Amino acid sequence: MRLAGGIEAMERFVSALQISSIGVSLGDVHSLAYPMPKRENLIRLSVGCEDVDDLMADYARGIAAAIN
Image (cartoon, rainbow, N blue to C red):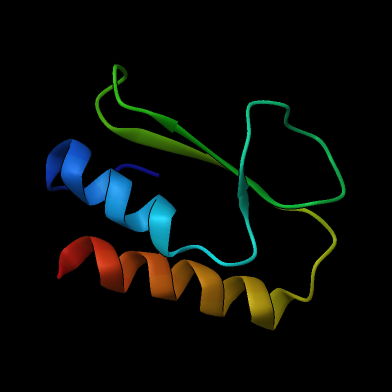
């Protein structure tokens, strides 16, 4: 996902996540977020085995933090 707002928005998004961990190893049973500030502020998300509603709420929380 790419966030408008630069590195600051990306940092707010990742900091607000409560379920997803920051990590570079993708393909785990746990959801991961890997910020890539040098690649046009991309955040690579790897979805694990957590409840889909919990993940949606986690990402919504991150997006809300990024735009505020």
